[in-house]
Structure formats: C-alpha cells, structure tokens
Length: 429
Ligand SMILES: [Zn+2]
Image (cartoon, rainbow, N blue to C red; front, side, top):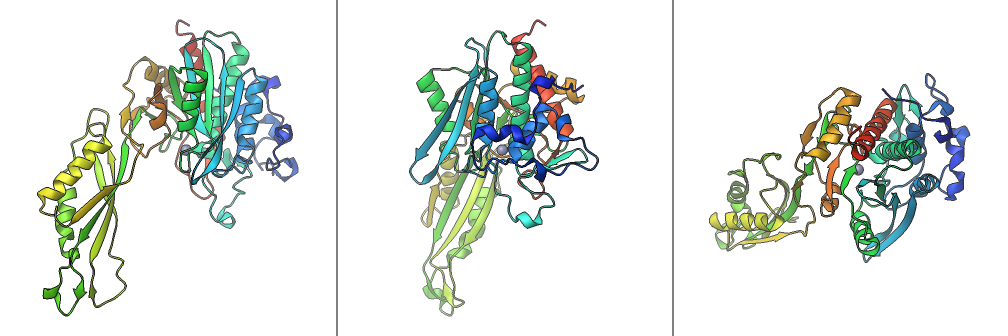
C-alpha cells in the first residue's frame, strides 16, 4: 500500500539539513539514538525523515527554528518558486511564513499548515527529547509529531514524489505554511493569504489543511468545516456593603442563577445538517472580593460559545443580550464580547471532498466521517479564498507530553495525499 520512494529523493538524514544555515537546526546525527527494533536512518521514507528533521527544529511559536528554511530548501530544489515572508504588527511578535508554488496553470491545489509548535512544557517529564524525533517501535516522538509537523512532512513528501513522477502535470500545487498558528494567529495565515492574493494575484481553487483530524485511527475523520467561537463577559452590578447589614446593600451574586438559566436553559439551536447544536460554556465567575465581611459590588461572568452556521458573531451577541433583558437583568448587566475572527463555515460535500474521501478509503479501508467538530483552525481564514477541507494524522497526543504518531501513519497520509494529487490533476485516469 505504501511504496518506498526513489533513492534520489530519499533524505540522507539530519546532516543533509546543514545547508539551511540556521544555527538552531540540529546537525548532530550522533545524538540520534537508533531505534532498538527500528530501521537505521537510511531506511526511513522521505516523509518520515522529513518529519524527524522538522521535529528537530525548535520552532516553538513564534520561533522559526529552521523548520521553514528546511521546507523552503526542499521545495526550491524540486522547482517550486518559494517566498519567505516575515510579517509584523504592533503588540505581537514578528512571524516568518513560507509560500511556494509549482506550475502556472489552473487548477491550483493548495496545501496549508503550520510548522510552529506549542512549548514542550516540563522537558524533564518527557520520556523522549521533545526536539529529538526519536523513533521507537514504529512511533516517532517529539513536539509537533502530530500537530502538525508529521502532516506537513506528508504533504511535502507527497508533492515532491508526485512532481518527480509527473513534472508537467496540468495545474499548480502550492504550499502556504505559517509559523503563527499556535500563537496569536495575526502575522501568519491571514497576512500570507492577503499577500498571495493582493501582491501575486494567485487564485487557489481548493485547499487541504493537514491538521490532525483523526481522533483515534487514521482514516476516521475529514473536517469539512469548523464551528465559530465567541467569548463574552457579563458584569452584574449590585450595591456593596457590610455582610451584617444586607438590607443596606444589594448582593449581585444572588442574580447569578437567573443569568445562568437565561443563557443555558433553552438551547441556542438544535444543530444543522453538518453541525452539532451550538453550545455555551461558562468559564469563570468571580467577584475579586478578598474579604469575608463585604458584599461585593459586582460579579463577573465569562463564557465561550462554540456556534454553528445558524449564527454569526453579531446575531449571537444580539441573542445573548436579548435573553439577559428578557430575564429582567437588563438594568444591572453590562455585556461585552471579545472581537472574534472565528465564524462558522462548511465546505459542502462535492467532487473535491469526494477526491479526498476516496483517497482515504483506498489507503486506510475506512470511510471517513465528514465532521465539523473540534476547535478552530486556520481553515477559518482560508475559506474566504477557496474551499478548504482538513485531513491529517491522529490527534490523540497533540500538545501532550511525549507527543507521538505512528511512522506508518505518516507514510499512509503521504500515500493519501499522492492519490489526491493524482486524482485531482488527472481525473480521467
Ligand atoms: Zn495545529
């Protein structure tokens, strides 16, 4: 099912990375323990070797860590026109990004992802070096193995293999890679999309984002959309006073049950064709009151809503305000919402989703569910430019200690993406 790649494309291991010229890029093959039962580095497939090289780059947001340089080099060698872009904005760190395109014609299939990772946390609590990429018993360990350096490695390897076999295919393949997905998401995908669209005039037709979409097993789940996210806060005001003289005060805490009931008792909706019901969760309630004998002046209630395609952030904010007023709390409640760029969206199942579904089924034997579950992703920005679907590795250990994926899954994902490329550019095959 998963073929070995041509020797000329095979990575020669970490030492081949030294030309990226980034000091943080590891260059010490001797530090890489060979798996006791595993194969030596020379036996690794292109995708797994690339995943290992990427994990060895310390690209904790917003550090580039050599990860984009590495991919830039590989894509440029294969004939991609590559562009490294650093974006800045007040109050957020500068972020490096990479855009690459092979081919000039339509259709244009874009692969998107991020090479930044969340911090490893307490490195002493890892059984494996979080930036070591150790391979043991068929598993590759390291921060980003699942989210999402393994996915990035699979899509890059698939494209390199496809182009090597089909250098003159009719169309274009591109990569949109950011170093800012796990951070503020200001100087990453949003700015890069604007730049590609405004400065280069490139128009994508479809996009695959290789975030880890599978809960347990590769092949279970494609994400065809994402819920929106809206965070809000209600400040209920009262009249402060001495706890021994409550008749002279008005305790705002007494009004919490009415507020909670107003926001929670009646569901926001029943769900839609592709989405679960919208859901509000309270995240904190506090008065900031340090003393035991004072009735507080205010109580702050924060919440987050994950919402479906019935709502926009604006209509949802209106509904929350309406409910608070209807509960008789309008006079004492101040309601505010954080700005959000996470609106709900869905890519309706059609030919493009089918190409991906068929490829997943062919390689894994599973018919993937078409889901909109989970958190937000950069797909929420890409959907304004082209239709976007998400499929990647198993997400079970993402952001955890000893994050890992099966190397066989990286190879299977590569095979899936190769099939997608084949079917997408040669549908009559
Ligand atoms: Zn991710």
